[in-house]
Image 1 (cartoon, helix red, strand yellow):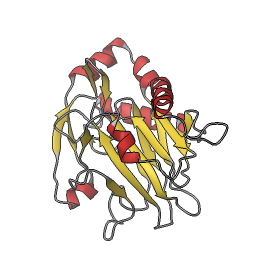
Image 2: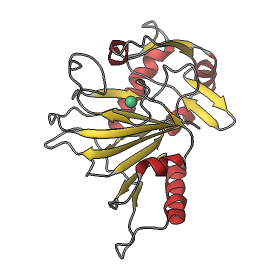
Image 3: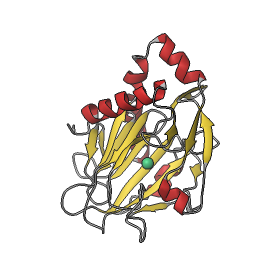
Image 4: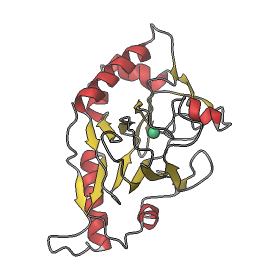
Amino acid sequence: MAHSPLSILSQVDFNGDPLTDELLMKTFHQLMDEHGYVLMCNVPEEFDPVRFCRNLGRFVPNYTGAVVGDVRPEPGMDDVYHAGNTRPLTPHSEGYDFAVVPPRYIALWCVTPAGGPGGETTLADTRPWVESFTAEEREWFLTHEYDWKTTEGVQRLGLDLKTRHPVLEETDQGTIVRFSCNNLIRDDGDPAAELQQRWHAAFDREHVSIDYSEKDMLVWDNWRLLHARNAFSDRNRHLRRIQIAA
Ligand SMILES: [Fe+2]
């Protein structure tokens, strides 16, 4: 069941005038702290997404090295699990395949919306799920290190990333959640296998679904929320993306 997003920030006020930079940032951070994501709509022509993202932190390059990445169907990638095609993506956090901590924020903005059905970005908050862990589960997922691999699509780009991290990591800037339905390596009887099932089911029940209009910009806390994508058919769908460090 898809829910509508609650955390929506209009870039223009009730008079149709753009918010000041100060008010935009203040409301953005209030909404981000509350919900872990912000969908910005009514985006004026002159809005500069890259400049906005610079206020949030240092940029983390995408897999190709491009700082501003393109998310659109790429030639020769239709047969693999990859953001650069039209297929669905299962719930995951970004950057479990990085040796370093994952990017804190992911920003996506819409250049060309998908015509026809599908193509929504979906999001769900892991905070209540982590809070409902038993003490034993919490201890296990904080201390047990798993092997992670990268996606088939990224492997095809020539990057064979292998990392070792726990699912939960505590830092002085908050708890990091790493999660993947398909790239977390575990045995069938491992607690992570049950967690994948449980969180995939919770994601399906609780996620919000982001249906982009042109220039809409979505930013989420990637240490806290999982994201996924619905399949679509319009190959003109085009988003841009920036990853931002803590
Ligand atoms: Fe992703």
